[in-house]
Structures are given as structure tokens and as C-alpha cells.
Image 1 (cartoon, rainbow, N blue to C red):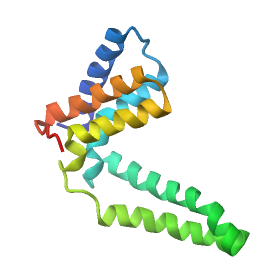
Image 2: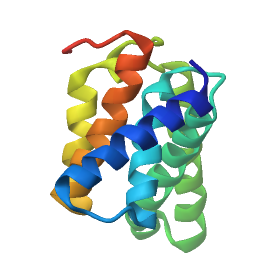
Image 3: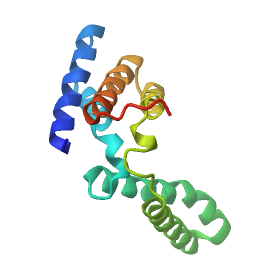
Image 4: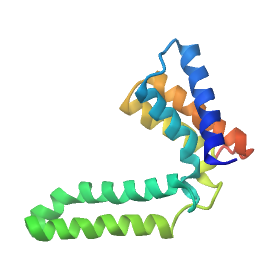
Length: 146
């Protein structure tokens, strides 16, 4: 399936979950559902999700390392060091990416996505995200536990 088909299947699954839970289809719900529907393909180098995850890892590594690097090396040099760490994080993800339809195509990954979503928002959105993620696995026919 292509990204649009996965997105449509994920929106359908996530929307059904929201209806069953008595929750409205809001913009945050749409974002969680869309991310869940497309995130399994973050392991395929030709997808936009792979590009987005690569960028997010680099940005996250930059911002997480910046306070420590600036404290240790000063404002300017710490910023440069953090930039190098961010670029290294992106490069490592690209070099060591999981094989396609590997760990990202498992029920474990879907549950992990739901757990992170629940921590950051609500259990209802987490279930809708899980439904969208699971729809991707079912559509690909690669439902694995781990």
C-alpha cells in the first residue's frame, strides 16, 4: 500500500475508535491518528515519514544536548557541539535504520506508540493512535508480536 492508502485506512480505524469511545474527532486526534497510520514506514528510506523521523531525531539530539554542551564548552562552542551531536544523531539513524517491515511493523511498536501517546495526551487518543497504527500492520499483512 502507499502512504495515502495507509492514511485513509488509519483515519477510518482511528475515527471508529474515537466514536466507540465517545470522543470527538479533533485536530490533536487527527494528528495522532495520521502519525500512527504512517509511522510504521519510518524504516523505509523512500518515505516522508523516514525523512521526518530522521529530522526529528537530529533536532531532538540537538536540543537535549545543548544545555550540557553549553555548560561544558560555553555558549558558542556548546552550540556547535550540539549541532554536531544533532547531525550525528540523524546520520546514525539513517545508517543504522531498522530493516523494512521489521521492528516498526510489530504489535510491540504499536503498543509503544500508544503508551507514549497516552503519556503525552489521553488514553482515548492513545487507543485511536493504536487503532491507526494497527491498521497499517493489518493492511501490510505483517502483524508480528515482536
